[in-house]
Image (cartoon, rainbow, N blue to C red; front, side, top):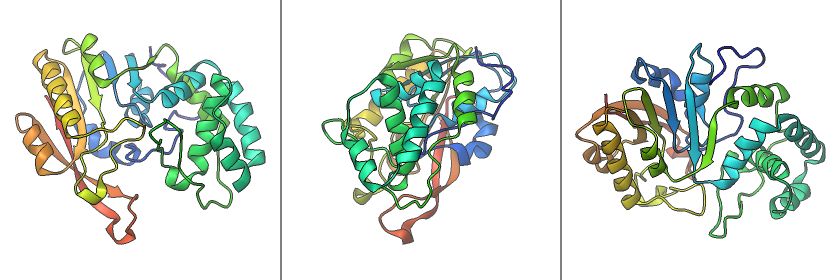
Length: 279
């Protein structure tokens, strides 16, 4: 069960995440279902929507999943051993410099908690906080240009750990939600890699596994199956003709978002996205 109150720092995303939803929550709030008992998030990422609900005086069960094994390991370690992760991050903070960054990036060995602290450290010090893996599943983002990066907040790590208690966290493909979400008591939020708006904006994966047009179609079938069961389903994606046509049978809401990652700085700014609901 999610904690009714969080006595420390309010839980919120502790990772930088491309496409994170923290700044869009005020636009999302009117579109959340009014009542539900079970929350499912199959593309966990930074977890902004989950942490929003964790801050509310609610009693919900939650299941958080993602195909990214490294990411899920981070959440599990913070859930079960926050103080160990904090100690490891403190050491990374002390040692941080360019040579150290690349040494840590190349070192794939260690305990689960060491691997979790490694990912958080790299995330907080890499270019644009971008999570990206090569075809071998190796983190390959260069170091960012930060003078004094804040790698971690002990109070936030402990608050996140509290929010994650009794939450199920697993490495699973998005289709796995079909085994659990069955009725109007359930709310599923999908935040997949967005469909690219152009051939030059085709970054559609944060891991070695790409997410292409066929995957978007498979996701739509899962969305429709859940909706047919009466499940409350919500999905974020890019505002383009392909996605609008794919979800034309559902409610499509326009959301304004700031684009901050683009090789051409002139193309950064406010763009429209879509929020699709089955209810």
